[in-house]
Length: 319
Ligand SMILES: Cc1cc2nc3c(=O)[nH]c(=O)nc-3n(C[C@H](O)[C@H](O)[C@H](O)COP(=O)(O)OP(=O)(O)OC[C@H]3O[C@@H](n4cnc5c(N)ncnc54)[C@H](O)[C@@H]3O)c2cc1C
Image: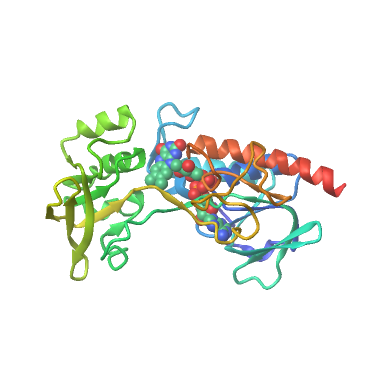
């Protein structure tokens, strides 16, 4: 991902500015630049979005043997770049209208970037437990990324909170390092697919604590134990662990656009099948859009549609 941090070559004007270099944004960039649009993709962290920090992807078509998330991200990045998308480090902080055009303000850049259309591919942020100790021990035992932090827990015990696909798959991944992975789930059975559930249940390093929630994260300078409450009996108990991994879903981070486009009651951006939002010239793709299933395949599908819809919008309004 060469040149990602070289922000000197960003121009003041583009046809399309794409916000976020996750699967949706990189796919939109690949399609739009292949169709000869002048495209800038801005990414505030690192290209690849959630995929870049997913250890192993088994359900992306064409990779029947699975692929490392980091490798898939590299492929998305290279493909968008090949057709001419400029992919650069930048945190979009404000969007304004300027007649038919849009202005994108970027942190640490004085002049806004002018464009004909925007594709929002922000993705989501991991949901927090919102319990005492969670913020205090973030980075000192509390994590939202098994790929990033799993190796710190070699031969130690950790807990995973959540019962969905991500929680269970990431929990199984953590057994590569940890001596024991306790899965704490508030219901009496997992929500993950049958395949993932079977794999987890057959892993002797995994233990399941059902009908339970974490009430607090405790320790002195790092995580030492969790207070776990059984929601059926009301009983609390202490669970000694060195790490806590939270996978309880995502929350939409749409502060930047919430006054410009319609969002639903959870903050996700409302769009029709064409990915058009309620503001002309702003399109939305990926997890940040209202949708039933948030997956890499659905994100790249949105990215495709957003790029094509943008192109039509630009042809109709700027030629
Ligand atoms: C732990 C975990 C494991 C998963 N495993 C799988 C799997 O195996 N298979 C599968 O299909 N799906 C999986 N998913 C879901 C999949 O990763 C997402 O559906 C997909 O990444 C969504 O792509 P996206 O482009 O919408 O958003 P993201 O991947 O979240 O990317 C959004 C990008 O936008 C950037 N951004 C946000 N705000 C700004 C801003 N203001 N300015 C600039 N950039 C910004 C972010 O930094 C991020 O890089 C997993 C998710 C998680 C959390």
